[in-house]
Length: 411
Image (cartoon, one colour):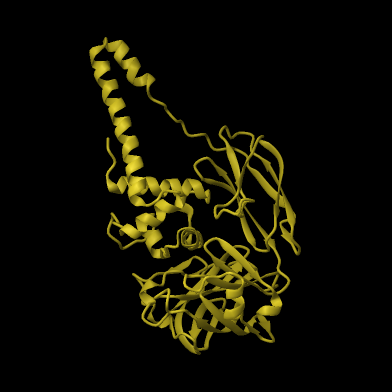
């Protein structure tokens, strides 16, 4: 049977899911969709919002059952898989299904012409039946050296899965040696043993034990602490680390345009700049307060709607809040506070609008019973406090384009 466009889109999404090896998309949270959005932007130059990706994967409620994406969206997901565009993906897949349909048609005709028993053997013999592997009764998945202050850092993963009869992999959530944008993963050769992996960048990594279909069987988290604040610029897969002497000035974090441009960043195209601090902040993710001043410096010549994101990373979860320049609040989707998610089509996010090239103050107050978000000292959102994110082990601020940070406090 020839696939229709909806089936082709689902095939494309399934191939992306398999290639990324982040687990089954049913288990993806906003963090995975945010990461996918960034991966598509870095690899293809096309920006797909988190809400668009959630709709593609059927994760958004309140939307029509069959979502029909625009051509640019289909081009982006096709190029992520290495095709020229959507038409190239469509042509190749339809060509394969037509060939398969012809083969099945000839098989059916031959089956009808032959004796009943032989015909039955022909149809059955030409089929491959895949039986799901049974779930293991015992899964031991642990690690050592998961917390470190220096790079390179080699983690050691111990595993014992004696009852699993299908190939298993460890997804390291890391950029492989060839510097591609897809995470590295390793096939486990035995059902018990230890395996090592070396990380060369300070960050927080989600280590997953997965099967061939990407289903997550075990989870671990590894963190390599930074020596204070770090600054990175990312454009088209290029990761540029900025020396602390060029972005830390007293209480202000700011990398100048001239310095960034001198390192090969093309200002005629979008780039992302972020500051991060990964350490044991010794602060509970159940009760805390974050305050920070930020100044976005969006370049209007290459993007209409740009953002600033403030992210708090906990040992058991995280929170991320997005602000967009005035007039673009309808494009906001990456707002989540632990397991509570805000989105543009069910929440009024107009209060999360900001002005370009002006200083703003942002505060997040998390108490035992309530959580409040404040912008420029005005409360813009309140809710009952969701589940704790565990202990706070990371802070990350991201600008689309350049931006400054000052007066940062968390307690």
